[in-house]
Length: 116
Length: 112
Image (cartoon, rainbow over all chains, first blue to last red; front, side, top):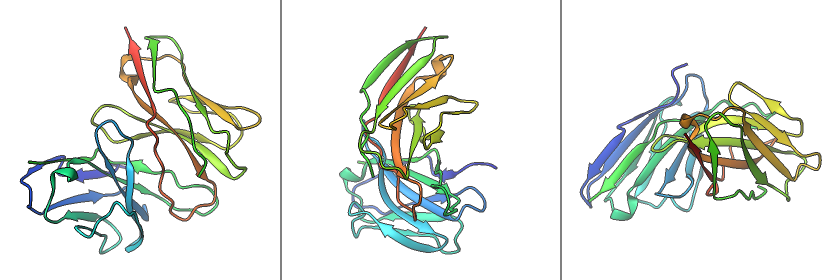
């Protein structure tokens, strides 16, 4: 069990550029979540996948944001035409989803995005 | 999901027990109490969860009151590395992918 990994760990970009982040969940975890965290706040939910299906999206996920999980394993989060307000830590979490008990989410180290 | 209330900050002396309270007065019978912590610039780390019985693992103990309206996370021998923001979250037992709703948490400072 190598844990959830995210790449890159840090990204600096200029306003208007597109960026893409990758998340590799814990092996065999079928649920994958994306969160965003700004300074001094707790993480906020963006979207989640069960296997390859994107089942829920937050209103925070504007149409400039898109997430995929094409084969039900790793996921990518793309932000198009970045804005300074997109500067945040982007966190990925994964879980194994039995129905009898709540699924415990395990988080990656995050990708810190700075938009200049 | 039920809402939780935590003190914004706490201090604890190194080597002493850290007791972090959480109020969740609107919790329902099928909701679990979860604790995570976040060390500066890292992702949240799972600590422990429970439904109604007290729980203990290698990291901490979770004490849930009999009426389940509050709980306490106990770090038995706090070290400087336990300095972090601690989040108490309430989550349904039967869920179909609901995200965790994080509040501002408690910033614990372990002092030498």
